[in-house]
Amino acid sequence: MTPRSDNQIIGLCRFSYLGDGGFMTQKHGPDIAAELLYAVPRMLRRFAYFENICLPSLAAQTDPDFRLVALVGDTMPFRWRKRLKELAEQYPFLEVCTLEAAGPLNSTRRAFRRGWNGTATYITGFRIDDDDAVAVDYIAKTRRIADQLLTLGWADAQTPVAICFHRGIYWDMMRQNADQFWDFAEKEPLGLASAMITTPDAMTNIYRWNHRKLASQVRCWIDPTDHMFLRTLHGHNDSDRAIPPEAQAMQATLARKLMRDRFGLSPRKLLPLIEQLMEAQT
Image (cartoon, rainbow, N blue to C red; front, side):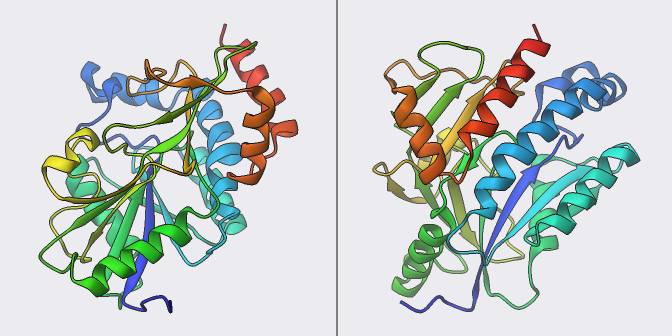
């Protein structure tokens, strides 16, 4: 199937974005939130995750025709913006979008528009956090499914559709021995490995609703089969994360193989780095 030229794939990562809502650190007020958000130890951790988990998984995509917009606030210190700019020079798919504080929907709408090529009729926009990864065929599968849904008329300019991959790996970095990795197929859409087909000027996108409520708001195409996401737990997640009760423990050897084959990561390099990060925060 020839890819549709009128459908552009754009990812969005809110990279320590100090907006007007959506993160637990903001409950203390903007000044304290900024102090917490941009503290040097925290930012070094965020860059470690971004540079060694998120970006490598996207760089390994079998379909390289996509954009990733890193949304940052205009209050972010220059040293961190400079480091992101250097990453954008290293990864051609990465674009940095700097905005003033705004609500989650308004800011993400503007950020997706920043990544738009100016000609595509549709945007299939996905969300990802700086400490998570997607499978190397995530872009290819998302594009193929989105194009098919558009061709069938199941999605159109008036009808947004969410594409949700439900199976993935939970990685509990705080456990240094057994049971670090867990296999799980979500019962409801997860923000990670989910995308939404919209038009560039639509009033909605994948950030519009809590991901657990997506299926009650828009049409959803769901696949619970292949491992499509790697979700991390490390004690500094802004949202509440935990190993789902029904997740199945995964052997470390299998997890390492999947990290290499499914996510384009290097366990030999990554695991010692994460162990050092965990030791530094204890």
